Image (cartoon, rainbow, N blue to C red):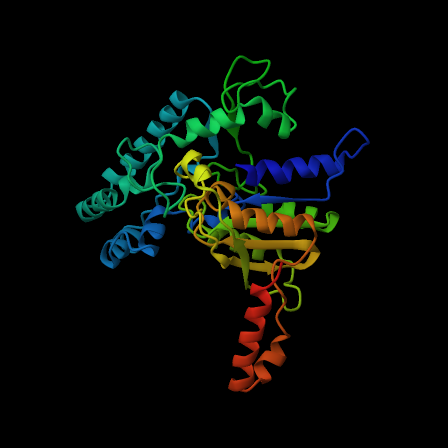
Length: 363
């Protein structure tokens, strides 16, 4: 839910700037809850399952069009808890409401919905005990030990110090809420991953419109294989902000250096951290796409990544964050549209080759 609390926190820091607060220059946010309207379709599991060939055209057509079924991800609940028990209770309430609607549908819809559940690890469920599709990263292995490994890592004293958290009142990452003796709870009041948002509630689109002109740069990035927050809706949200694409800044591939790691590192790392890491140097590789808008707003996809980009694709994540910090373009700009349109086929093919070489050699 950093897609909500990062922009809202940055606005508070800017609105109440003082010598005691950080001097915010920009921020990056990944696979973010941004705007209900823009993300509704891409965060629907029937739509997503069909996109990746996990259900047939017939089942999709019946469920999505004839039955008008929509199965949003759990991210759209508008609330989440550090307590597993509370999350299970919330899930039961949502499931019972869905079952009531299902019982009111015809038998054909009920049957096809059950086939959908059979074919998709209970609809990409994060709570299905026998889940076999990673609900956060479509192409990554199921790794039940990762959460524990991550918690142990972040709770290490040296890591807390590196994150400037050595003296933070919260002593145990994820579970400990200081001063309350409770675990954390998240409740959204915005129209971003929130099915219960009141009419007229703001989404993060309004925040980006307000924040981008006041900052030096904002990067919104998204793994292009994220079942939880699919990139199509995030890109729609950025278009909805309403800033023009800068000249030549349209959707462009970017590349990164896929260097090697040691065999010892591979042996020590968790299964689902950097699954593409290898002892072989793979050279320059395709990292995803980028589009640059006015006011320093950029949207970046990270190829092959799921929800947690720095975990799943650490090398390209580090690459584009370095470009953000150095205020550089991630990929060369295109020539103007009228110039590209005026080229004959031979000149255009030469331009494609030249542009690709330039992009691939960048940085």
